[in-house]
Length: 493
Image (cartoon, rainbow, N blue to C red; front, side):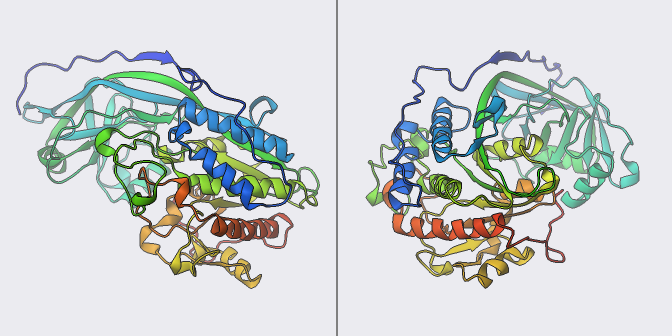
């Protein structure tokens, strides 16, 4: 499509919003279960049913519902007797977020080397992913890099960058120049789909971490004919503009610890983690039932709440019970950090924030044991009470667990790439052994409104939590020190 008019640059309206603001009250009085220092099925069920209740409306990151869940979890940590290691001596570690609300569609104009101006259609010819606050791009000359020696030594804010190589080549080349996320460039351009996308959708709000440094470039993906122009070297300049509002939102990790007995400054730590957020509310056309839709807590035809009972109220409940039980036992040799992470469903936002602001030095953090979706038995893992471990073949951890007769087997669905799909991968990127325990059986209620507490097998969850407790003790008391096997650590740093 031809066009002669220049794109008007949008003004970003920036407002400060607290996640605790709004018309719905945030309660500090949500009842905890009856206290028992031993691991109990009743406490697990109470935690899952509260977190997955309709009242919490899906615990979406950056909402009052997520804050309410965080406060409940912080009170559970306090009662368990953990040491608070969050912001200002609390159990809540502040996670500053940015919500980008598109009040009108982004616009794009390309100029080719022969002077032709081509206007793109959002959602059809192009898509864009703001990284933190969206940048308003002026006219940017496109820099094309096909070999490492063509990549400039320093980035340019007044240039757009396209690295025409494989994903691993882009990562390696940019990493060698200290531009891992396109830091310092005005825009990063990438191939999109080979054909135009069908059906225009309004840009959805996006939630990302508030970032100051490094400053990653937004990513512009070109589809169909615009992608062809890119690949044929016809694009001279790029001009992108947003019609967006930026809201700042405060969310929280929930963090507590049991200090180890190893000498201060010399001891190691392990991080036991789970994410407590889910994906919130559906629109009417997104509401759908899953495999268990005939046995849900409400009518799935009218249900708009993604309750997230298995994903990941089950792992969160298990972590709470681990923390409570370990806090009332003998002190561990290694410090144990319990991390209930915010915003996993939005891109591991809380865990990446913890990586940037750890409460214990990462260089002395020897492992991350992550708990995700423990609420239903998996026949491939051996049925009720059995867990599988992601990345089993990558480290010595799985074999160490099996040598102690723990009911933990390898992940038998490697094609699903679960090792890379949960909070553990944020630790792996730092070179830390990070693996996830799960029993997810690919049930159809995953990310559906039918992921309800009524479908959780609480006897199975109790047995899995006992196994996770023993696995954590082995790491905490120093019996097991996991290591990467040759070739096991992925090249994702």
